[in-house]
Length: 192
Image 1 (cartoon, one colour):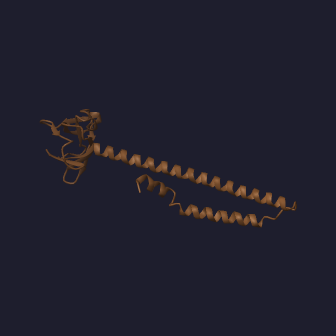
Image 2 (cartoon, helix red, strand yellow):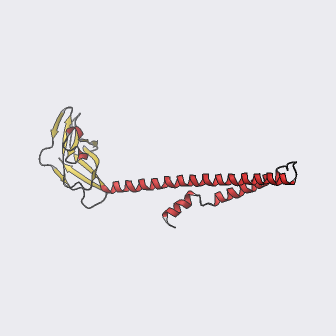
């Protein structure tokens, strides 16, 4: 079966349960028809009453079918929306690449290391939008940033910030090619 056929089949619960419920409902309603007391109007009135009950049973079954079909349509619509969202997220994930930046630097109390660079995700060289890094054992500062794979030649630097005072890393900018071959995560371990 195709994917859409399987989804429809699953949304209906395979159909067996509903068919069994319908058959049970028909039997129950037919039993009601047989147990309905005949009117005192004679044979013609009894046949008309029996016919009215049958029509009511059939109408109830039609409404039940319509309700079940509408519920199945809503369920299919929900499954389709979830599928589209999965495809969208996968496209976004394949368009970006996680880059783990790490630098070993001995800071003093109150200092923090921040990352700034040419990409908008790295603050576009703006101190206000620079990315804070987290301290780990061994005085290694790390941060993971998702960058677009299309970002070629990203440049970045580390900053030391203590209150309003900021000291830029000396030397040339670090360069990074995000779109280079490899897995989903790229690691950059820089030494100071």
